[in-house]
Amino acid sequence: MMFCLALQLPAQEIIDRVAARVENDIILLSDIRVLARYQQLVDGKSESDAQILDRLIDQWIVRNEAETARFPQPSEDDVTRGAERVQKSFTSADEYEARKQQIGLTDSDVRNMVSAQLYLSNYLDSRFRPSVKIEPKDVEDFYDKAVIPRAQARGQTPPSLEAARDYIHEALVQRSIDEQAERWLNESRGRVHVEKMLEQSTP
Image (cartoon, rainbow, N blue to C red; front, side, top):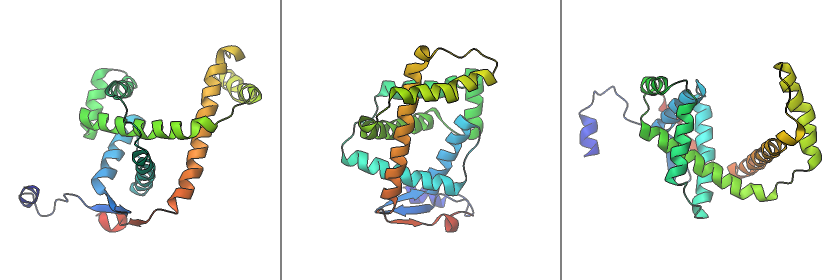
């Protein structure tokens, strides 16, 4: 049925193409396009096709390990909250709907992207958070070197160290998780067979 529908479309219209093979799986040009549109929605701009392809390959590596470990998918409530955060980043619901329509994303697309990102970030968090060690001096140094100067640059009174301590601690934890995840990905990339066909795939 899918082939029959494809034959009805104009010959010059591209249905989809393989952008890369990762082990026994494939990444499609449409996967790149959807992530590009999502980036445009949340960031106002998107990376290049080549950068997005590299990002999708990294996501494949993380997802493959998470699925092997039978890591649980995020709950529907978590996905809903994540989708609501995306909407609330706009000044109004009307602006969000207009931008989403302009880019060519549906509510289902947004939920799918939020769900996929939550799954990957939750897995990386569970994998690397237990090994993170943040010392009190790390928090104090961040407060002195980042929080106070940022507040002063904005003409604001900085929060007290005690008021900011939990926020700073979590920010440092997240930075450590990101650094550990990047080192792990660098090692994992060399063990995964990847064949990129993006240049041949794009018009």
